[in-house]
Amino acid sequence: MEAHQLHRGRLIDHVQLVVKDFTASKRFYEAVMRTLGIEVLSPTDDFFMADELGVSSADSAAAQGRLTGRVHLAFQAADEAQVEAFYAAALENGGTDNGAPGERPYHPGYFAAFVLDPDGNNIEIVFHGAAKRSAPSVVIEFEA
Image: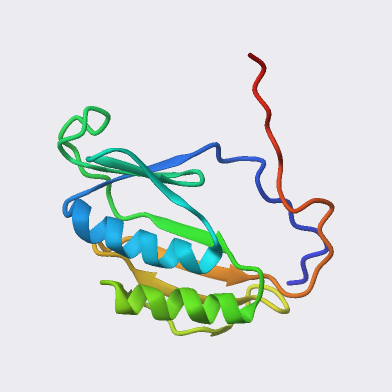
């Protein structure tokens, strides 16, 4: 299967995970997001955001006492080295191997790794190979 064109950043506005061990999850996501250059912000002591990913404890008002089920999330990497760094940081910070870094058969150049986060979510980090992007990201500016 050959991919002629990929579009990212068009479908998902944000994702929220509700986790059983908030401290373990925060440690895990702070470490892996650091490898991607993504800041983790904690507006409250039971919730944090990393770009479009929100993570909260089961006690948070948004969670209503319910944990999310097992989820597969895939994050984009800038290159193979970033895949390797993310995978290593995940394993060093409470993640479990679910597929070491390497090329996958999904399309030519698909280089990815998979880990389970502290709640068992399947977290993927993927580099789609050398490509030219029309823009590094979509910029949204809110009017006052």
